[in-house]
Amino acid sequence: MSKQRIMKRNSFRIIAYSIIAVLLVSAIGFTLCNSSVAPISESVVTPNGESVYAPVDVDMKLEKVGDHSWYVQGKAGIATDNAGFISNAGVIVTDEGVVIFDGLGSPSLANKLVGKIKKITDKPIVKVVVSHYHADHIYGLQVFKELGAEIIAPDGVYEYIDSEGASSRLEERRLSLDPWVNDQTVVVTPDRIVDKSEDFTLGGIKFTLSFIGKAHSDGDLTLYVENDRVLFTGDLIFEGRVPFLGSSDTKHWLATLEKMESQNPHAIVPGHGPWAKDPKAITLTRKYLAFMREKMGAAVEELIDFDEAYNAIDWSEYEKLPAFEEANRKNAFQVYLSMEAEGS
Ligand SMILES: [Zn+2]
Image (tube, helix red, strand yellow):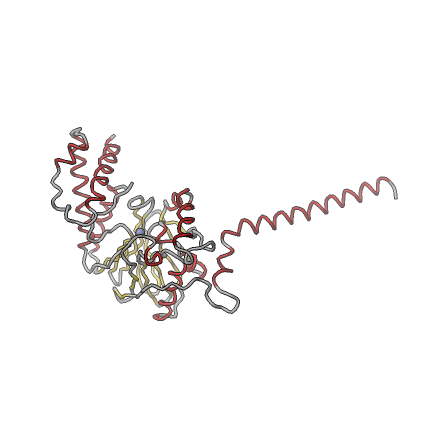
């Protein structure tokens, strides 16, 4: 064989090996990149079609709050009590499919909810609206995603998803809520982000998504079912207790509550606790925020020191409410600082 032919053959070999190597690396890369989502489908059912989510023994009842609207109520208590069943989820049944509001605190809880829904309708679950991304509302999302539902969440949720806190919280819950939250549990990213309010109709039922922005969390969304006049608020409403303001944008939150009151809903389903039949729950939170902003705003404007201003305020309308001791002073300080920033 001539030297030239050998060289030609070698270069063919090199090209062929390179192509094989590139294909191999791509295949490995594809598998790795998709490993965060792929295991979900493998984990949902065994080959004989049984659920592999650990069964969860909690008392979960679908309660009707409107002609098409239902909800399940999480138990009072800390996040790891009652197998993590501390938050509510809404269920709206239409002729063309089911809309879910919030994803519950574990795949096992979501799977249990799916079983309850199957008893009241044979329609598929087509959408899940997530009020906000906090652990107790999202770990069940993968179950709905697996069933083909579109996951809709407010702008701002990536602040949570990309945060160190999100992964450390999941690690912690894999221990504290084992076996309901485990290595198969993932934080599902939304299919669609909503950054302004919008309406949609499904099976003749009109829904309004209200984008709240940064209020209780880095991004909040509410869902109003117009035909039933039922409002699902997520954690924007704290029924019968002093709300926890955290790092919220109280100005925006207050404006939203005013709008909610004007919708005059028949039923309000909060993120935690029982549903309310009238807008009283909104009114309490709205009045509290307005009072806080009025008092703290005046102190900031008159350059009064926080402690002096706080001690001079008559809190008698709120001090009998649960969580006043724990939350009120922190809330006031947060509003004081944020109103200083608003004014600057
Ligand atoms: Zn919550």
